[in-house]
Length: 281
Length: 132
Image (spheres, rainbow over the protein chains, first blue to last red):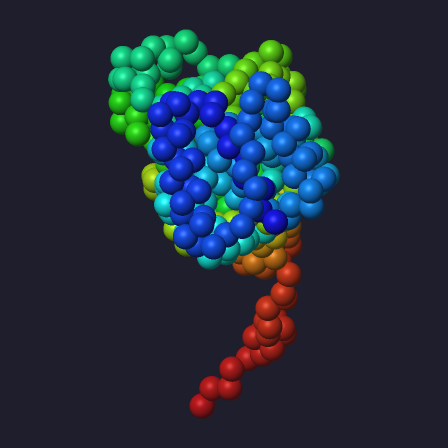
């Protein structure tokens, strides 16, 4: 059975109603059965995930924003589900990763039920599918003007200390860091960075760059393609412990989620996901 | 190599250690590795290691092939080829299959090659050549 969790958070009311109606119509058209449940202040995502498990649902579909899916992931615990996603807003990170751009393509994808086993990353006890951002990394995929970007780089680098794979310590002065399981770009564009089926995390550390470098590499900084910027550190690993600095904000999909210190690890082939043919991996 | 775009290097390299990065401990990799920063400990990769101009490694190194433009203080074991570039410095013993050294490189240590080449004994060469 399919269980759809519909979340209004972050979706304008008018768009939500329209998307819900469209989804219901398309699922009927594609002859997909299932139950829909809407998130309310009294029925939070955690309650709905537990309800789905109790009713024997095998497929859980998060309908809403990236945050909806991240909250569903955080609520799954040890339950076994195949996961799906229906974006109720445009240009979602997860939509880019899974190759699902709107409700229509999501319904079509669910109907064709192409599934792939993918790695899931975990920060402390919370799962995430995409990437973690620190420092200037939090502005990845945001619209930041040139003046604001220059200002960001004028603040100076942060001394970072990490333990990798319980094997070695890294210390470096960085402007930003990304810890990537996957991102909405095809891996062949930049070697194998961001492949959610390789069993590894990719750590990118952006060193301090001068004003000319900021101008020259503006697109790379804002799109999170740090590997294209000279001097960037790229490390493939399975486990990262961020030791210093303390109380540094860590973002997932633009939302502050944790503060350092934190432990991040990859769990290979953890979940089955319904994916589109235009997926980024 | 040093002048190539980072993107190109990333495509063929699994891990890159940037110039401001300092690593303490055992750095192991299954793919190609490029080091431009500082490493104290051990470095081991199943494939190729490139030590950039700004790199300083104080560690024993093991790799399939190694190219050195920076400084290595430690013993180096290479299955294939060790290339010591013009700016490269090695202070330690070398054990390798093939060795290439560019003019200007510095090396202080013992060098041992894996395969002993077939060389005619000196006595054979010393025999007087019959003249008519």
